[in-house]
Image 1 (tube, rainbow, N blue to C red):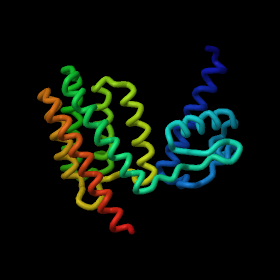
Image 2: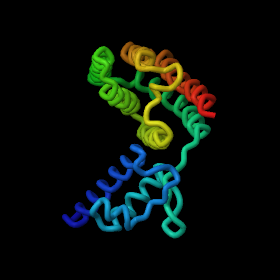
Image 3: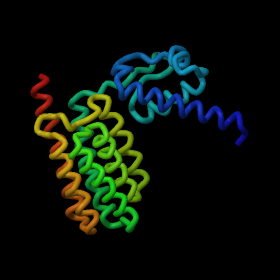
Image 4: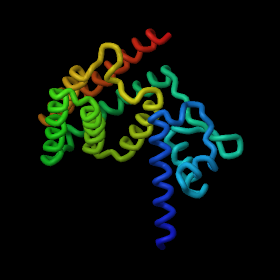
Length: 221
């Protein structure tokens, strides 16, 4: 692979990461049309890496449409979010089960480290830092499970759900303390190599988020 090809790949990756961030930060709103020329201008890139980035984003489900009729930021409805959480409950339960079966000593040390950081950030009321470790914990468990296809499916549906809401901790009946207790339960089951309990705890965690989203939908209606 020559330097020019590597450079183009890097530009495409840069465009992908930045457009993704704009969508998740709601600087590009659901339903908004994405114009290649305008995005290229904002990114100070040519249209080619922008188009490649948009194709990847369409595969992720963050944008829809085509280059002839128009590309738009995907709209995720509350009902879509509930469907996504149904899928997450099943898949994250499976991931936790496999993690409990496959985890190596170094993996368990990583989980303990993340939980310790979360506990510290909770005690210090450092919400943003806690939220980052929340994301890291879910990602780590899925990585430990060793199923690459499962990792990719969960990555995509989590990205899609973030179009509707970046964090679920402020939903009715949630909060950092409750989420932390649920995360502790999942990690404890993995660390003690208890697949049944790991799956049960992971599924309960997502099920409780789903219940909170349903309550939120009632409030917002």
